[in-house]
Length: 301
Image (cartoon, rainbow, N blue to C red):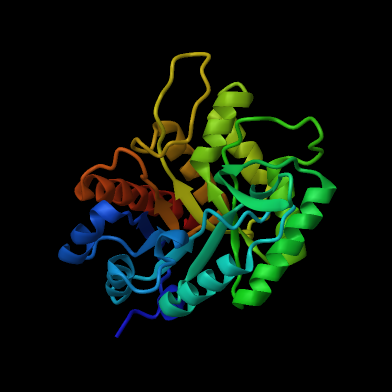
């Protein structure tokens, strides 16, 4: 019998800490004692009918709640999300019964014009959007459509953006707040993405950037927190959110700030490039739990 995610969440008063599960760690998680509360996978990696990957995920689902994290939905796209994509996502949702489903506040789909007709193409990346009223309305339409089709609540992640838009009249935090108010969706707060944007565009005072960001968000709006690390670069070069290093001290401090405001929010450690041994990833999750227990203990006193 698989674990019931909703019952587990309702009965667990402590923080839930998980890790992003990637292919090289499939054997590790099945062969190891349970050391995290949940795992998160990229939805698109399991869209195939049958196959080894989906078989492994079903085995993992017997012991762990699963969070489905999508990267190709493109909720901010002017183009509609392809029906074929939504169909496969719904099939996976029905198979796995995730306890959280997330996407990014970005666009991925566009229309390529050629001599004969327009062709819908995927960017292969999480492309940022200007925080305008038009884009807010469009993303709300897309979120409403997806939530209605899936019968599930989405949580929407802030992104690392490598350009700034002059036409943005809302900050990202204000934009996400409005999305939640209008659609009922929640926020996936990625602390490292705030840190990356702070380093690239805001002078690099990460503690101040995190504080300014989270104080805009309603206390009950955050449904999950992401933690990650990225490669350092020489001064003057753009920082890229490559998820290739341990969580930095600055992001750990940002995590403390977020916990103090939002409380015991399910927390995930992401590591996607230059993957470490399973034990190293688990140690990052254990550090997150230790920090959360300290902050939340002090918060409740």
